Amino acid sequence: MIGTANGLAVSITGLGAYVPERVVTNDDLSTMMDTSDEWIVERTGIRERRIAGPEEALSDLALPAARQALEDAGLKGSDIDLLIVATVTPDMAFPATAAIIADELGAHDAGAYDLSAGCTGFMYAVAQAYAMLAGGLAQRALVVGGDVLSKIMDWTDRRTAVLFGDGAGAVVMERVGEGGFLGFELGADGSGGPQLYLPGGGSRTPATVESIADGQHFVQMNGREVFKFATRVLVSSAEAVLAECGRTVDEVDVYVPHQANVRIIDYATHKLGIPDDRVVIDVDRYGNTSSGSIPIALADAKADGRLTAGRLVLMTGMGAGLTWGSGLIEWTDGGTT
Ligand code: ACO
Image 1 (cartoon, rainbow, N blue to C red):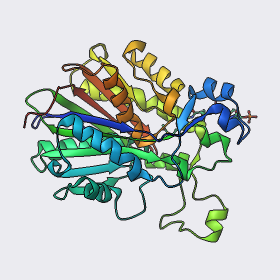
Image 2: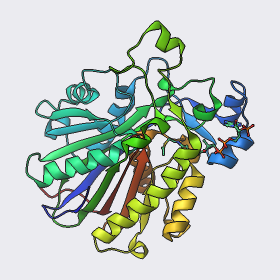
Image 3: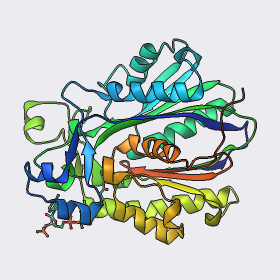
């Protein structure tokens, strides 16, 4: 799916992020499994990640991020009429975490639902919110991207456990006078699903004593295949959305790729021809936070003063599905509805 924004101008008018307090370094991991700081840094660029406490669920990370985004936009929870939570680790299978969050925020008039598209979830959710706002179905949207992947990791599997961290980010989206989103490209290749999946817990492999003992309720990944996929789509999706919007890579001021791995980001950045100083990287501090990765990186970029009005910002996510998604936005200062 690809398209340019030809409806009303819609932009991000508020940003927030939250990560758990507990920092787990690579050295900490090396006391739990056969790995080392040297291996993890060389192969991934990750130095540490945040891990949720036993009592912390997704909504506990998402709510502070959402409240920060609302404050940044100068809005209250009751102003929101659309709330989407992109995640693969909701508080529970149902009700949707979005409904839990809407209640906590006082967003009683909001349509609220969860969306599952792996690490690409945030980009899918932002594209949906764009369409609902531009189409006049909603006035003010809150989009949360977040995951608590530590809860679905096999902590004895060094091939996966070292890569991920917990965290959430949130954006408020509103109509604006000009600027804002220029276009989106989203895609999915279900034939690649078994390269990165969690087989247990659904209707195919329900929770049984056997499926739990067999490790079916933990993330399983073919790292090399995911690496090849990720490097390919980071480039192709970015090129596609830029071409569709009539923009060139030289015009991109800030590039926010999904924070999976520094090697994947470096490959894509150089292949696209984006100068290093325009790339946002925080995977060294947070690991791969899945749906949280892009909004957390946006919040980091804003804190660094990199997101100023008029700047062209390119975001691309990719992950389980296998899915991918890009969005191009001309950054704006705030909503004008
Ligand atoms: N510590 C030490 N050694 C390890 C570890 C570890 N944590 N993990 C694997 N190894 C070993 C392997 O067992 C293997 O040993 P062997 O040669 O004796 O068999 C060796 O290191 C090399 O393993 P490879 O899997 O070939 O290592 P590779 O260079 O491919 O790096 C990695 C693995 C980092 C997972 C890489 O494939 C990758 O980054 N893939 C992308 C995965 C990803 O980012 N997924 C995120 C989710 S999807 C998304 O967000 C896009």
